[in-house]
Amino acid sequence: MRVLVVGGGIAGSAVALAVANLGMQATLVERRGAHDPNEGSWITVAPNGLDALAALGVLDRARAIGHPTVTNRMYGATGRHLGDVSLGVPLEDGSVALTMKRSALAALLTQAAAEAGAELRFGTRCDAMSDDGHSVSFTLGDGSTLAGDVLVGADGVRSTVRTRLDAAAPTARYVGLTNFGGITPGSRLAAELTPQAWHFVFGRRCFFGAHPLSTGEVVWFANVPRAEITRAERTATSAERWLAWLGTLASEDAGPAAELLATGRLELAGDNTHDLAHVPTWWRGATVLIGDAAHAPSPSSGQGAAMALEDAVVLSRCLAQDPRRALAAYEQKRRERVEAIVRAGARSSSAKIPGQVGRVVQEAMLRVVFASGLAARSTNAITAHRLAEEVCL
Ligand SMILES: Cc1cc2nc3c(=O)[nH]c(=O)nc-3n(C[C@H](O)[C@H](O)[C@H](O)COP(=O)(O)OP(=O)(O)OC[C@H]3O[C@@H](n4cnc5c(N)ncnc54)[C@H](O)[C@@H]3O)c2cc1C
Image 1 (tube, rainbow, N blue to C red):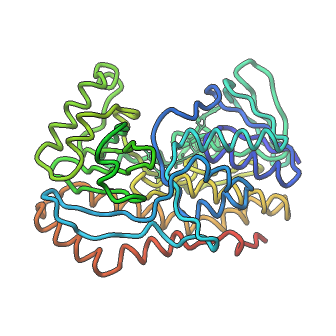
Image 2 (image 1 turned 180 degrees about the horizontal axis):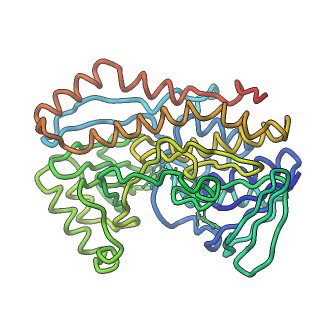
């Protein structure tokens, strides 16, 4: 069986690796060049995502690029501790969530896929595709055509494969938050903040997260509620101006934000946060969607990459067991779980936007939620999922 994959992010790289591991041929096209492991934002891969990495045979390699992370510590704008939420149920061997560069994970997966025999074509765009129900093909930017048995659309939240499957498919929703990320080297806060924890501040004008690394660096991000940032504004605004603006927004809040912003550098600027809750058509004929193309939780869920990894493992197992029924079985296994996670992510995003209730009331409500164990139970339910339990057909 030959599997054609459009997109070489986390989902596409993982599915190319997964099918190659199971003895199938995989050809992946990615319009960008090969991943630079040092670029872009940081993500935390929760234990259920680690379980998928173990199924892909790369958990040890992921440990080498990741930083263990066990807790989310929540604070209010005045520095009041609102509660702690564990990052989920560790694997049986004790592995806890790992914080890493998203690009480093993608680079690791593409490297492993190439080693497993997958053909990877970076800097190659898929321009058109066809599917007669039994075989598929796609046309590349240079005009050449490749044929296969299954086409996997792993082309992200703005997927064109999705609209090829269903011209009326929904597009992503802006959740009302912009995203900035950065790193502060050599900060005294690296030793002062609790190790292996994200420190979250529900600030007056922005939500801020910081994670100290054992290297002496502190990784951080800021979510600012506002209208979407346009391409023109992004182009016209320098990193220094964004940092100064973020510093002003965080200036009245207690916690590490002001200091980290003043001494740090931006790695992600002016990203608009989207989610995509329900895509009616996940597959048709021999074409199927995975990852953000099918279901995109907002980053606040901390689950987008983990979901993409789970998708890749489940789809590859379904294809290996019974190609004829594989796509229906994959959807049946995945849809309910991922859609529930997108809904949970939407609630987490809303909590970052100070609403009409006001800050003091919001903090009181958050304290009740964290003390009640509601947030912990929800995280545990999501992160305790193990793929060894999956039988596809
Ligand atoms: C700021 C931020 C923080 C996040 N934090 C977390 C976190 O802590 N934990 C977590 O689990 N998840 C997190 N996520 C979510 C996670 O990063 C995504 O869900 C995940 O990376 C999606 O992977 P994907 O491969 O489906 O899509 P993408 O990463 O978007 O990859 C799609 C790829 O397809 C390529 N492509 C598109 N069209 C074509 C074409 N026609 N031809 C060839 N190639 C094409 C694109 O170039 C791209 O490389 C975060 C996301 C953001 C934005």
